[in-house]
Length: 73
Image (spheres, rainbow, N blue to C red):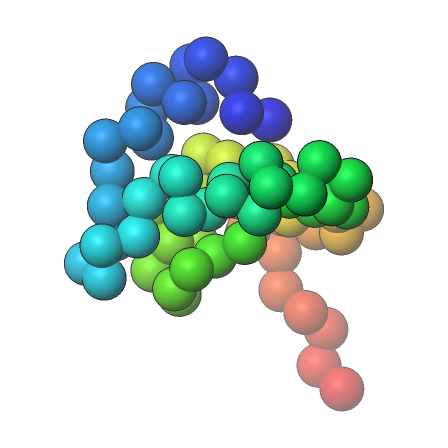
């Protein structure tokens, strides 16, 4: 997921809380056997780093896209 293109697009971005791409991928770097390998350090990270989060979330949840909605209970 972290292709050169995605890396170049995100490498200088920060959330208003100061979270960077390194903060997002740090767990995966430190734990190579991690199932997912990325975590949102704050809620804003999902939007700021959407280029990496969206495809991972879609694959992890079996095709559930950002535009999809959970069904009502």
